[in-house]
Amino acid sequence: MRLTVRAYNVGHGDCILISWDEDDGVHHAWVDFGTHHKDDRSVYPGVYDEILARTGGRIDLLLMTHRHLDHIEGFYQLRTRLRADFQVGRIWHAHVTADVDNQFKIASQALAQILPNELQVGSGVIGDVYRNNLEFSNVDRMDRIAELFAGSVFAVHRQMDLAASGALPSGLARMQIEVLAPEQDSRVYLNPIDTSLAARRALDDHFAAFAPATAARVTASATEQLPARDSPRDEDAQPDFLRLADFARLRRLLRAGGLDLLAAINKSRNNTSVVTRWRWEGVTLLITGDAELESWALMRNHGDDLASSLLKISHHGSIDASPAWGYERVFPTRRNTNSVILSTNPLIFPTGNEVPKAEVVTAWAGRLQYPSRFRRTDGVPTGESVEVIFDR
Image (tube, rainbow, N blue to C red):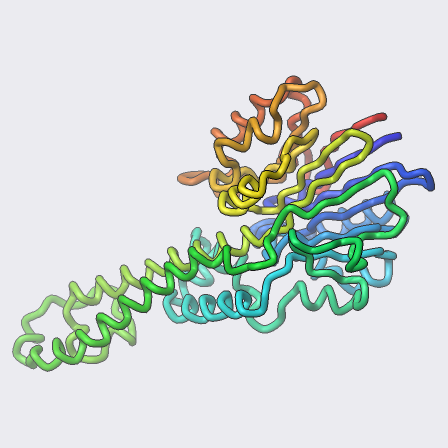
């Protein structure tokens, strides 16, 4: 009897195949399939074909942990082939309540107005995070995928009775799957966005009230003596008081402050990730999506037993997704079976708040007895996989 976890090098993204023995043969689950927009998406067909050949086109569970391009874009790009080539028992994605999705839309609209277009399409950090979150403006990719498999798609959350709802794939006897996150009440993940929007509204209200009074006091003779504006923009040209160079600079700083809102959207989406615990013949897998510290804290507060044989490190090794208390909680002792998989591409975020974070890598490695059981996707050529095997 064998359980194998394979993680494919698709760049800065996740693509994981879990394969295990049941009495009637080998079963498979496919978790996420996407890349960062800077990665080469030509990797998709080769990885897809390899998984198709390995599984014979039979997938018990296809899991999309959350709505970010680096987790679902491969499924979206190849969705027509996916429907034709694979028999998929169940599809899971993250439950997010309608009012919270509406909050995401409101925040997205506000951000689109705040961020200058050159930042949205640029190659910097702002453009990177913007496109990973907000490239769904017209068509939501996850919905388009789900439409092709109507009747077998489930938005899952912690409080859901998977068996009673029919969400569990059939034929699972040795494997048990439990959902630890997200919460049914998605509002618990909105605090970062609410805070950013409240701050933005306060600033907008302040300057909306301030502008008319200032404009009335700025005379033509006064403005003629002001220093010329640097990097003028159309919205800075009206009314006259915006010719104040200092005020124009302040407006640009406020627009750059939209990064706070963007980070809040990114964090909230990550925290809606489906976190699953898999139990098979004494082996426990913890598959975390991009769950950040807030999601981890909720799982801890529920008293969850997070002890695992294998962890898929959350959020590609980011510092904001591996809580300090989590290392010993996941690996209480340094057993010879302790294993870690890290799906990452360090070239995407190489400086500053780099991903993966060296401290995160070191801390998780410190909970392993054998360094060889720390498997990184960037350690193999693009399109190939690393694997961890458990024999029973």
